[in-house]
Length: 250
Ligand code: FPP
Picture 1 (cartoon, rainbow, N blue to C red):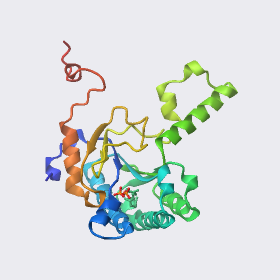
Picture 2: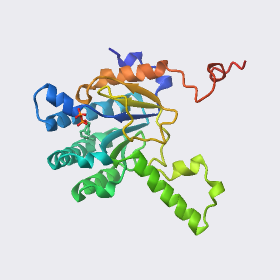
Picture 3: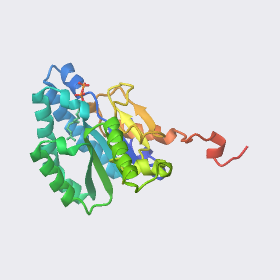
């Protein structure tokens, strides 16, 4: 089990993104209602946010509700929205004390009014914080984000503001919901599924991926530190050779 002392402070991933999966299975294993799994999952959120801030991660992005999740039973959606609101209200002072700025990505206008209001209140109150950005992906889908970006870029081309030949990777990145953050260095998925599930499709081109069988409600500080330690052992090559990355040209 990893300890904070094992972590190299010189090699902390700047941006960690997490697919929090397995709340339902956690509850089923304990013969509990799925909602109990989400409640326990919210406790993991709290612990992972605190640990991220403690080790100096600058951007933490959590996949809290996907575009596809709208297809879940109404009672589960309502419970997730309630939990989200409760989390935001309870954690505001913690965010203010720890220099955490709340941010969102996704199609936020689809969320219920009361949730949007709480989100915008916490975002306003934390807007001057700069030690860590906590981004909640809500009503988020990577394909929908890209489709939306293509439409907006096409409009610019139509209006003559932009030429098709001028479209670059940076321009595309600038039209995504993540326009103001770096790409993730590390993507963690809990509960052992080897899938991306429509999360940050464009942004994870060179991201290191860590998959653990641990279910999200059981994913706490030491498991998270294990993931960071594993990341620190990886050699990131970005398509180059190992020798080039080490600065030894052959
Ligand atoms: C995946 O588990 C989890 C979700 C769809 C929602 C994530 C929500 C939380 C962690 C709690 C509230 C969030 C915040 C930000 C406070 P699943 O239901 O798909 O699990 P299963 O695959 O085992 O059924």
